[in-house]
Image (cartoon, rainbow, N blue to C red; front, side, top):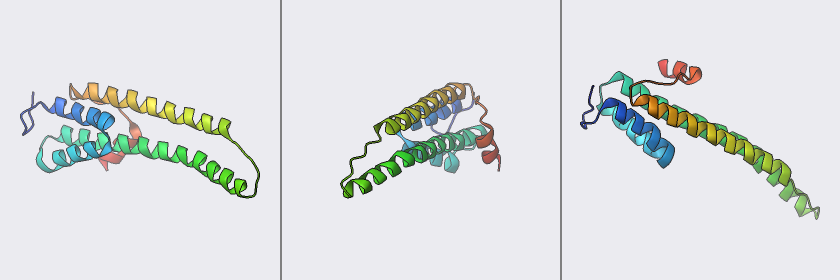
Length: 135
């Protein structure tokens, strides 16, 4: 079992990046990934760190993109409200809220799965992200 320069196993550190990214946010994952890329030599750990950040960024972009639609609709509601009309699109907002929650659930399940697989220096294949990392 290989160890990092900090003295913990490579698999545990990789799992830590995934789970800290999920529970503490993207910034913490980026800081840990930066440490790995600068100071660690294990190629699997470097790939794991980049994949963790890529997965977290991808899901953040997906959620932000989905949230643009209700935000745009709220803007239109406010714009129409200026002229005295009373428009409410709460059903549409609820649909997009449910979609965002579903995406967040998929993110949590995927990142927890990646973290658990990382304990044994494994990974779950995500073709789009894996191809991006190989480049």
